[in-house]
Every structure is written in structure tokens, then in C-alpha cells.
Image 1 (cartoon, one colour):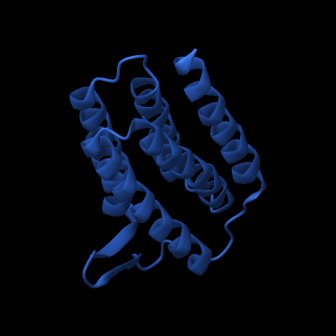
Image 2: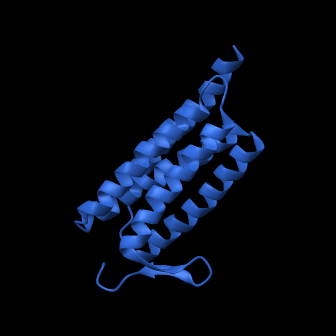
Length: 147
């Protein structure tokens, strides 16, 4: 029964994220930057929650990331950047895998941390390498000619 009660709010968050994410549309570099800042906060919160064993909280951050990634997918599709769309789709797949680990009856914390690291390194890192300049201290910006 307890597992069922955990699934209900998680499912509602995922559904809400899909609905809101489908409605969100990023069209400007400023909107994109705001989504990236939200992603950094959500990823940080997710990693902290996984580290402390607060797996339901981590799943809420995954839902936020999923929502933002769906908006990012539309942004890059509008810009006709197929490689960026592929990176975002891969990120969504990795988020789904992480969500599955976090939704298990008994969560393997090490597996969750590994899946979170894989998501961040392979998704965020790949897109930043192709399209972004800068760093966390100086700030990120699009490389010349990207937009």
C-alpha cells in the first residue's frame, strides 16, 4: 500500500510535467538561458536528493528536467539543429532510465547516482561542447553562428 501511495504523486508530477512541458515553448536565447539555469538547479537538487536518499524528491527534480528537456527539444527543432535534437532525445531517454531506478520498490542508491552522472555527463556535456562557450563561473553563451 505504501508503494502505491508513493507512485500516485510521482505519476501526477510526471503527467503534469508532460502537459506543462508540451505547452512551454522556448523561442529566444534568453528563454533558453532561463531553462538552462532551471536545469542546473534541478540537476543539483536531484543529485543532492539522491545522495541523501530522498528518492521521491529526486524524482520531482527529474520531472522538472523532463519538462524542460521537452521544451528544449522544440527549441532545437525550430532551429533545425538535428544533432541537438538527438542529444536532447538521448537526455530524455537517460532521464527515463534514471526515473525507473528511482521508482523501484527498493532504490539502489549507487545505481541512481551512476544514472544521474551518466545523464549529466553525456547529455549536458555533449550539447555544451557543440554549442556553448564559457563555464559555470563566467557564464555560458552560444558559440558564434549557432543561432
